Image 1: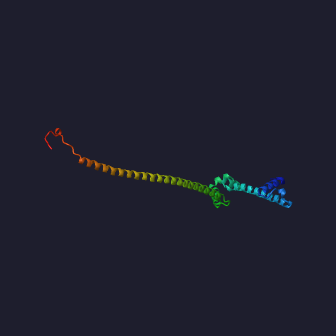
Image 2: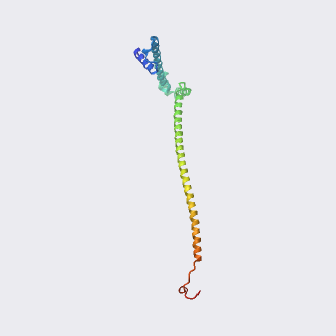
Image 3: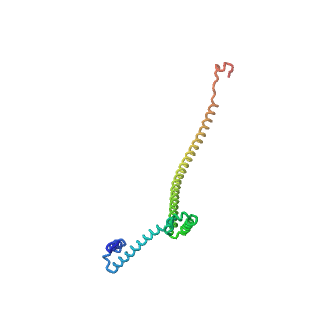
Length: 195
């Protein structure tokens, strides 16, 4: 957004979007100019933030090569003096990264923590769904179990009725058998017994 026309059209888009109306409909030319001035400042502010972000990215990763070139100490010297120069650079890098002045590591930790929490929440949601499904399944099984118990009780009552009826029939048959007199045939007994 280099020139005033682009800024003014951008301000116009924003004023319409924010419900203020078109910039040309604002009665005060002074207010129109101030809106453009405000947007110019905000554009510079955003550009400055972008530059800072790039610089932060550039300066957030310390390495032995980065330090040796920045300090104008040849890398070969650092490698040759690994007990002093290299060790010193490594220890200082470690200390600086622990301080986390730019809060880069903190943000990364927060992202990781958020990702882990999201996974945990997803797992909990799935457990809730599984629990609800299991609850419905158990309720259906309980209904089926009650139905089968009633059916079994009905069958047991039927068996008891049939046993009572069977007992009555046996008793009736026994009584009928005991009252029945069978004539003895002489031919069957060989004529030995006479009644």
